[in-house]
Length: 197
Image 1 (cartoon, rainbow, N blue to C red):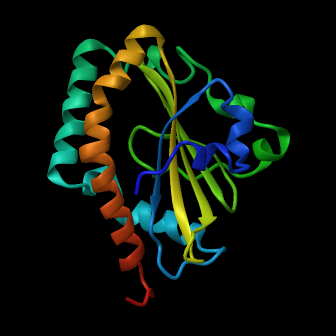
Image 2 (cartoon, rainbow, N blue to C red):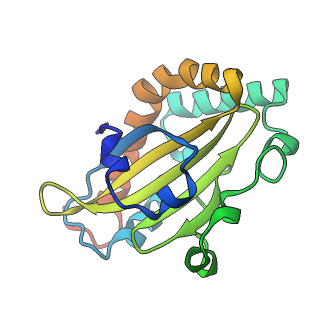
């Protein structure tokens, strides 16, 4: 379910400390029936096993494939345009306590780089010629009393081109990608080993 941006901004996430120059683009919640406060690692494991991009629906895979082909053709995804090239990784902004913590394990997809993970947050980033973006996953108590996953996408567009790019892909994100991701991640939670249905 899509949420107001304030649902992310108002929560005291640690990610706010390192993303003050980023704008919140999208916020979504994912139902995780029966989830408790300590189940965030189980949700991340379910996503890692059954929620990857290569396991998405055909329309989503086609959209990502087209984007990567276009990026290769136009040079959007060259290493010089990414992390350590055009922009520094957010790991360089981490306060000492987060820097000393174990980073989130890689496995969130072929294009996302781990920044940090806590018992209630997982942060990954991506940079290319269009944007520097952050995917924040957070674990919060929902209105029904169960805990649920929240995803916020924060972006720092690369100038006017980046802003136009984000505006151009917005309909695809909202009408195809995020609804499919919601179904897949919620199914990954329900189907994980040991969950009662």
